[in-house]
Length: 111
Length: 112
Image 1: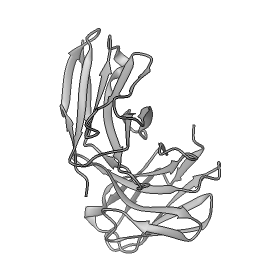
Image 2 (image 1 turned 180 degrees about the vertical axis):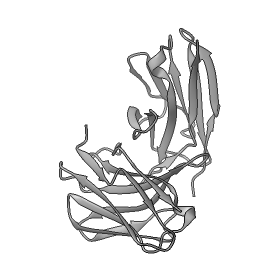
Image 3 (image 1 turned 180 degrees about the horizontal axis):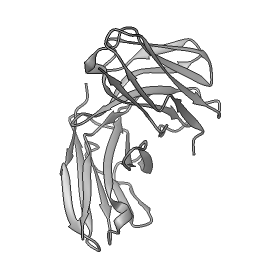
Protein backbone atom coordinates (compact mmCIF):
# COMPACT_ATOMS: atom_id res chain seq x y z
CA UNK A 1 0.00 0.00 0.00
CA UNK A 2 0.92 3.66 -0.15
CA UNK A 3 3.31 5.01 2.45
CA UNK A 4 3.19 8.58 3.71
CA UNK A 5 6.08 10.08 5.63
CA UNK A 6 5.16 13.21 7.55
CA UNK A 7 7.77 15.44 9.15
CA UNK A 8 8.62 16.68 11.60
CA UNK A 9 6.88 14.43 14.12
CA UNK A 10 6.73 17.29 16.61
CA UNK A 11 7.49 20.99 16.74
CA UNK A 12 8.01 23.33 19.67
CA UNK A 13 7.74 26.97 18.69
CA UNK A 14 7.08 30.36 20.19
CA UNK A 15 3.94 32.32 19.50
CA UNK A 16 4.35 34.44 16.40
CA UNK A 17 6.76 32.11 14.64
CA UNK A 18 6.08 30.62 11.23
CA UNK A 19 5.69 26.84 10.89
CA UNK A 20 6.49 24.48 8.03
CA UNK A 21 5.71 20.79 7.73
CA UNK A 22 5.60 18.33 4.86
CA UNK A 23 4.52 14.93 3.65
CA UNK A 24 6.19 12.69 1.11
CA UNK A 25 4.75 9.66 -0.60
CA UNK A 26 6.08 6.58 -2.30
CA UNK A 27 3.24 6.90 -4.83
CA UNK A 28 1.90 9.62 -7.08
CA UNK A 29 -1.17 11.20 -5.54
CA UNK A 30 -4.04 13.00 -7.28
CA UNK A 31 -5.35 14.65 -4.13
CA UNK A 32 -3.69 16.00 -1.01
CA UNK A 33 -5.64 17.01 2.09
CA UNK A 34 -4.50 18.65 5.32
CA UNK A 35 -6.34 18.17 8.61
CA UNK A 36 -5.98 19.50 12.17
CA UNK A 37 -7.01 17.54 15.23
CA UNK A 38 -7.60 19.00 18.68
CA UNK A 39 -7.49 16.74 21.77
CA UNK A 40 -10.59 14.60 22.14
CA UNK A 41 -12.03 15.61 18.78
CA UNK A 42 -12.12 14.35 15.22
CA UNK A 43 -9.82 15.71 12.51
CA UNK A 44 -11.04 18.87 10.80
CA UNK A 45 -10.29 19.54 7.14
CA UNK A 46 -8.12 22.62 6.59
CA UNK A 47 -7.15 22.60 2.93
CA UNK A 48 -7.74 20.38 -0.11
CA UNK A 49 -5.39 20.31 -3.12
CA UNK A 50 -6.20 18.78 -6.50
CA UNK A 51 -3.54 19.91 -9.00
CA UNK A 52 0.24 19.57 -9.09
CA UNK A 53 1.84 22.89 -8.24
CA UNK A 54 -1.38 24.23 -6.70
CA UNK A 55 -0.95 26.69 -3.86
CA UNK A 56 -4.01 27.24 -1.65
CA UNK A 57 -4.50 29.42 1.41
CA UNK A 58 -6.95 29.33 4.28
CA UNK A 59 -6.31 32.38 6.46
CA UNK A 60 -2.79 32.07 7.89
CA UNK A 61 -2.43 28.56 6.47
CA UNK A 62 -0.96 27.86 3.04
CA UNK A 63 -0.57 24.44 1.48
CA UNK A 64 1.09 23.35 -1.74
CA UNK A 65 0.70 20.29 -3.97
CA UNK A 66 4.26 19.34 -4.97
CA UNK A 67 5.06 19.31 -8.67
CA UNK A 68 6.32 15.73 -8.48
CA UNK A 69 2.88 14.80 -7.08
CA UNK A 70 4.67 12.82 -4.37
CA UNK A 71 4.77 15.55 -1.74
CA UNK A 72 2.83 18.35 -0.12
CA UNK A 73 3.67 21.17 2.25
CA UNK A 74 1.77 23.12 4.90
CA UNK A 75 2.88 26.48 6.25
CA UNK A 76 1.36 28.41 9.13
CA UNK A 77 2.31 32.04 9.45
CA UNK A 78 2.47 34.01 12.72
CA UNK A 79 1.38 31.13 14.95
CA UNK A 80 -1.15 31.73 17.73
CA UNK A 81 -2.10 29.56 20.74
CA UNK A 82 -5.13 28.03 19.00
CA UNK A 83 -2.81 26.54 16.34
CA UNK A 84 -1.73 23.93 18.91
CA UNK A 85 -2.76 20.43 17.88
CA UNK A 86 -1.85 17.59 15.57
CA UNK A 87 -1.72 18.18 11.83
CA UNK A 88 -2.26 15.30 9.42
CA UNK A 89 -1.72 15.06 5.72
CA UNK A 90 -3.72 12.63 3.62
CA UNK A 91 -3.38 11.60 0.01
CA UNK A 92 -5.41 9.81 -2.63
CA UNK A 93 -4.21 7.93 -5.70
CA UNK A 94 -6.08 8.10 -8.97
CA UNK A 95 -9.21 5.95 -9.15
CA UNK A 96 -9.31 5.30 -5.41
CA UNK A 97 -11.98 6.44 -2.98
CA UNK A 98 -9.71 5.81 -0.01
CA UNK A 99 -7.25 8.14 1.68
CA UNK A 100 -3.84 7.30 3.13
CA UNK A 101 -2.92 9.35 6.21
CA UNK A 102 0.42 10.52 7.52
CA UNK A 103 1.31 9.89 11.15
CA UNK A 104 0.91 13.54 12.11
CA UNK A 105 2.92 16.54 13.26
CA UNK A 106 2.27 17.64 16.84
CA UNK A 107 2.56 21.42 17.21
CA UNK A 108 3.25 22.88 20.66
CA UNK A 109 3.61 26.57 21.44
CA UNK A 110 6.10 27.41 24.17
CA UNK A 111 5.05 30.29 26.44
CA UNK B 1 -20.50 20.42 10.56
CA UNK B 2 -21.03 17.36 8.35
CA UNK B 3 -23.92 16.08 10.47
CA UNK B 4 -22.06 13.01 11.76
CA UNK B 5 -22.68 11.51 15.17
CA UNK B 6 -21.06 8.49 16.75
CA UNK B 7 -22.33 6.37 19.61
CA UNK B 8 -21.31 5.55 22.19
CA UNK B 9 -18.61 8.18 22.71
CA UNK B 10 -16.87 6.09 25.33
CA UNK B 11 -17.01 2.39 26.09
CA UNK B 12 -15.16 -0.01 28.33
CA UNK B 13 -15.65 -3.70 27.63
CA UNK B 14 -14.08 -7.01 28.51
CA UNK B 15 -12.01 -9.23 26.25
CA UNK B 16 -14.16 -11.65 24.30
CA UNK B 17 -17.37 -9.61 24.36
CA UNK B 18 -19.05 -8.33 21.18
CA UNK B 19 -19.13 -4.58 20.62
CA UNK B 20 -21.00 -2.50 18.05
CA UNK B 21 -20.22 1.12 17.29
CA UNK B 22 -22.66 3.27 15.38
CA UNK B 23 -22.08 6.09 12.94
CA UNK B 24 -25.06 8.19 11.87
CA UNK B 25 -25.16 10.88 9.19
CA UNK B 26 -27.97 13.23 8.26
CA UNK B 27 -26.90 14.40 4.78
CA UNK B 28 -27.44 11.31 2.60
CA UNK B 29 -23.76 10.79 1.68
CA UNK B 30 -23.00 7.66 -0.29
CA UNK B 31 -19.52 6.94 1.10
CA UNK B 32 -18.84 6.23 4.78
CA UNK B 33 -15.61 5.08 6.42
CA UNK B 34 -14.41 3.59 9.71
CA UNK B 35 -10.89 4.38 10.94
CA UNK B 36 -8.95 3.59 14.05
CA UNK B 37 -6.39 5.97 15.52
CA UNK B 38 -3.47 4.78 17.59
CA UNK B 39 -0.34 6.64 18.73
CA UNK B 40 2.36 6.50 16.09
CA UNK B 41 0.03 5.12 13.41
CA UNK B 42 -2.14 8.02 12.44
CA UNK B 43 -5.53 7.06 11.03
CA UNK B 44 -5.89 3.61 9.51
CA UNK B 45 -8.87 2.50 7.45
CA UNK B 46 -10.81 -0.48 8.78
CA UNK B 47 -13.76 -0.75 6.36
CA UNK B 48 -15.71 1.55 4.12
CA UNK B 49 -19.08 1.60 2.41
CA UNK B 50 -20.06 2.93 -1.00
CA UNK B 51 -23.79 2.41 -0.63
CA UNK B 52 -26.46 0.45 1.20
CA UNK B 53 -25.20 -3.12 1.62
CA UNK B 54 -22.00 -2.26 -0.32
CA UNK B 55 -18.86 -2.46 1.78
CA UNK B 56 -15.16 -3.19 1.32
CA UNK B 57 -12.14 -3.84 3.49
CA UNK B 58 -9.46 -1.38 4.47
CA UNK B 59 -5.90 -2.01 5.60
CA UNK B 60 -6.72 -3.21 9.15
CA UNK B 61 -10.00 -5.12 8.72
CA UNK B 62 -9.12 -8.33 10.59
CA UNK B 63 -11.37 -8.79 13.64
CA UNK B 64 -13.95 -6.25 12.42
CA UNK B 65 -17.15 -6.45 10.42
CA UNK B 66 -19.48 -3.74 9.18
CA UNK B 67 -23.04 -3.37 8.02
CA UNK B 68 -25.01 -0.69 6.25
CA UNK B 69 -28.72 -1.39 5.95
CA UNK B 70 -29.69 2.29 5.65
CA UNK B 71 -27.91 5.20 3.99
CA UNK B 72 -27.64 7.10 7.24
CA UNK B 73 -26.17 4.37 9.47
CA UNK B 74 -22.86 2.52 9.25
CA UNK B 75 -22.18 -0.01 12.02
CA UNK B 76 -18.80 -1.37 13.07
CA UNK B 77 -18.80 -4.65 15.00
CA UNK B 78 -16.05 -6.31 16.95
CA UNK B 79 -17.30 -9.89 17.18
CA UNK B 80 -14.99 -10.77 20.08
CA UNK B 81 -13.08 -7.79 21.39
CA UNK B 82 -9.35 -8.09 22.11
CA UNK B 83 -7.02 -5.76 23.98
CA UNK B 84 -5.31 -4.87 20.68
CA UNK B 85 -8.59 -3.27 19.61
CA UNK B 86 -8.35 -0.66 22.34
CA UNK B 87 -8.29 2.51 20.27
CA UNK B 88 -10.16 5.61 19.23
CA UNK B 89 -12.54 4.91 16.36
CA UNK B 90 -13.58 7.58 13.89
CA UNK B 91 -16.30 7.54 11.30
CA UNK B 92 -16.03 9.73 8.21
CA UNK B 93 -18.13 10.59 5.20
CA UNK B 94 -17.03 11.66 1.74
CA UNK B 95 -18.73 14.82 0.66
CA UNK B 96 -20.50 14.79 -2.70
CA UNK B 97 -18.31 14.52 -5.80
CA UNK B 98 -15.13 15.69 -4.04
CA UNK B 99 -12.62 13.45 -2.31
CA UNK B 100 -12.74 15.37 0.94
CA UNK B 101 -13.63 13.35 4.00
CA UNK B 102 -15.31 14.77 7.09
CA UNK B 103 -14.99 13.12 10.47
CA UNK B 104 -17.24 12.42 13.40
CA UNK B 105 -16.26 13.11 17.02
CA UNK B 106 -14.90 9.62 17.67
CA UNK B 107 -15.52 6.72 20.07
CA UNK B 108 -12.92 5.82 22.66
CA UNK B 109 -13.00 2.05 23.20
CA UNK B 110 -11.09 0.32 25.97
CA UNK B 111 -10.92 -3.47 26.04
CA UNK B 112 -9.81 -4.82 29.42
